[in-house]
Picture 1 (cartoon, one colour):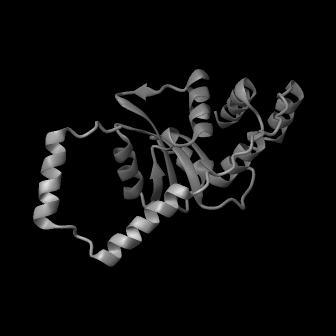
Picture 2 (cartoon, rainbow, N blue to C red):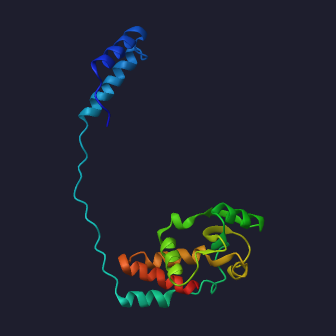
Picture 3 (tube, one colour):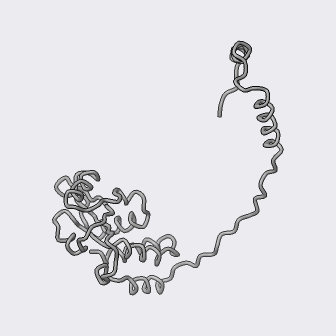
Length: 195
C-alpha cells in the first residue's frame, strides 16, 4: 500500500506537468481515458462456490496394495536413461561437477527442495538410518541422464541411492490420491524399497 501524497508533493508534480507537459498526445490521452473508464465499469467475475472433490481416507488395505505394487527399481530394463541419484558431496554444485566430470548430463540438482514426494522419501530414508552427513559431505539429490545403470551408480563410493526417473514417476502417481499420514507412510514404504 502506498501513502497519500502531501500537498507539497502534489504541487511539485503539478509544476512538473505544467513545465514539461504530458508525454502523451491528445489522441493517446483520449484512448487511455476511455480504457480507464471501461475498466472501471467492468463487471466483477461471478465467483461461484468451488467444491473440492471428496477424497476417501487411506486404509491399511490401500497401503498394502501400494507396498505389493512397488516394483524393485532395477526390475525393468526399458526405463529411460534419466535417473535420480543421492550423491555425497560438500555442496550441490560440487555434486553436479563430479557427475559432469564422469560424463553424465546433469538435468537438475537440489531436487529435494522442489519435489515434495522426494523430500518425504528423503526424510524417510534418514529415519531409516541413512546418515545425512559423513566426513563433512551431505546428501544432494540430482537428476541426471547417462548410459550407466543404477547398479553401476550404486557401486560408486559417492552414490548412496540411485533409481530411474520413470519408476519414480510411476510411484508418485500411485500414491497421489493419499493424504496426510497415509501419504507419509507410502513414502516410507518406497524408501524401504530403496535401501
